[in-house]
Amino acid sequence: MTVAGSVSLFLVMVALATLPSASVALVVVRSATHGTRKGIAAAFGIAVGDLIFVALAIAGLAAMAEAMGVFFAVLRYAAATYLVWFGLSLIRSASSPLDRPEPIQTASGMWISFAAGVGLTLGDVKAILFYAALFPAIVDVSAVTISDIAVILAITLVAVAGVKIAYACFATRIALASKEWRFRPAAQKVAGGAMIATGGMLALKT
Image: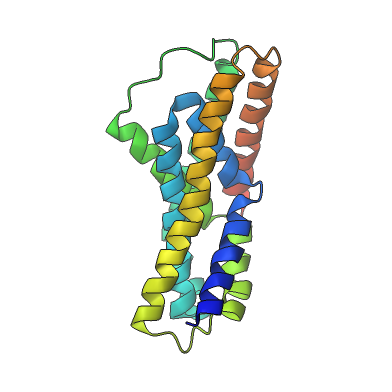
């Protein structure tokens, strides 16, 4: 890959990762309500989902279509179930103080956040369209070398995980700065409803 191509790919991935989406909502809400580390775990899960798409795009669109079978369906339904459960938890806890002690960061909780990020990305129509259509227009997948693949994977990880981690850290600071915000319970209920709706849409995708 040329330097210009690498820069173009990085800027496009940063722009797409920055746009408001279900993945951004997952990272922000997870970080603000359960601690930054769980938000970061979700961010890395989202990045891993993108890395899977990169590998499939490089392998070819036929391989991508074949791979999107039972395995991806299971991950998608698992992510949908988690999002619905998480949304219900947000709604139930809307009346609790925001400055309550942060929950213990258990390994299982971190892995759940990570898996939710992976599953959500693999079921994201925006990600599928990008890697099926726009990615091959930026990267000549028929001519990539081993070193090109390493560069592409590094760009994906830095761009996607970097932006989502920034969202995770920013969400926590906003939560601490606005803990007296009187509309917080209503906003939390809206966020919970959005998580439930996202989970339902993810489960209904074919």
